[in-house]
Length: 403
Image 1 (cartoon, rainbow, N blue to C red):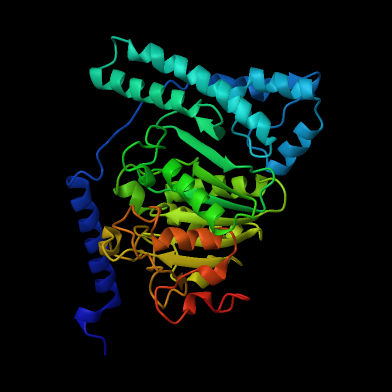
Image 2 (image 1 turned 135 degrees about the vertical axis):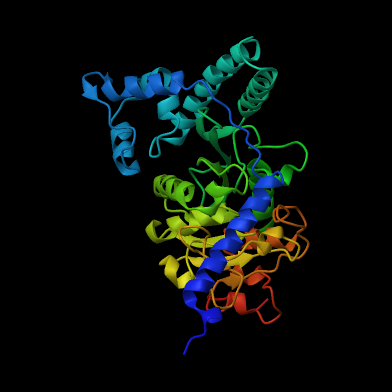
């Protein structure tokens, strides 16, 4: 006979209460500080509306939400002059269409950044805004100026709200191996890159990984994408506790991967809430995704790696001082993201994170976590260091069992 104290229903309620308490505490200690920006979406809205009814030399334009393969076929059927005209007319649309040739997207996003920068310059001097609002406009204008720097390859850009952006390092069109860095909470267009604590921001993470991959395998053509092209939760609050934003992000991630040029192998490196996005996306991702590695994960919305229903290898790592391990690993009533990927029961390949410090140190140069990511990214699995000394994380990978 089951006692009242061990009742599954009571235990579930206790778990739910524990999770609620954790998020309330986080919310009242600064983790959920609201930093909203009511951006001027007129340009984006007008561009989408014009695209929806537009055409090119008598041909209707495809829906902006069309699958990447359809968009690729449409643009392949255009002349160079027709493509250029569409970029000039609809930069905020073309720059965000997966399936459009890379050079066109890079050019479109540079034009879109120019437009968005003008809007923020006006807002900087708008007396109807509060001083905080004008300061936010100044920060955004400065970030847009930085993103327009010489040689930068902006793959996606949307200034609406907190903003979305992604950037390519390396030659994505010729890459044999592509790594995608999927960041977690509090990611927006302003903190897409940082001067201080640079390796805690998507650009710093991606640059660090790209350098490590080139050092690990100089002969491999590799590219890394800093992918902040989804709306992430603000702080560790209710949005971070549920899967709504992860579901929306997973669709965008799947579209990105399907639109990548060539037949490159893809590895996903998913940090914090980014691992939730990757977990939700996993079942639908195409076979070209060879590896999914999560760092500092709050869970992947499943109870085991098997439930991800993916042919990709699943890796996990976490520093012993990472605060994320104190958040309950459970899923009750829609709250929480499931089991801890670091546990043996989950079934991931557990990596060493030696040298990483805390929740944001996994991409710091010189850390074992970074060298492990680089080894995975270039397919050099024999160089990967497992969390234990038995090499268990390399088990079953051809040629990778020995150091």
